[in-house]
Image (cartoon, rainbow, N blue to C red; front, side, top):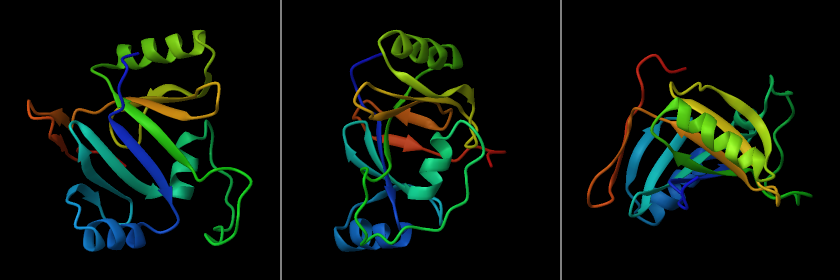
Length: 159
């Protein structure tokens, strides 16, 4: 696995509120928005910050159908940190599998075996020994220009 981060995803209680704060409030530019689902903003050379629903992120990481539960009051303290994942985009499905196996061999807990992703790519999730979650994925809509600017697009046929 290369030593880099491509996407930091924050599981937020309210995507609209995150958009109001970061985009309207701080003036950050949107790289891609899937209304009501996810927002990506460019934060660095080849680096995106994503705002994704906390429950949706938990469901995406889950290896099986998510358990339905009532939304948590964001003002209420939790025993665990807010949901988030770090992501790295690789070139092929074989690369996803290879990184997953290397992480497993290094002591990671695989949370979701390599498989087709709802967004149209291919991905897996694992947790490092401290519990930080990583998604390793292919995404044909992902491009990084020579200046480090990310271009990301939705994929035809994605759920």
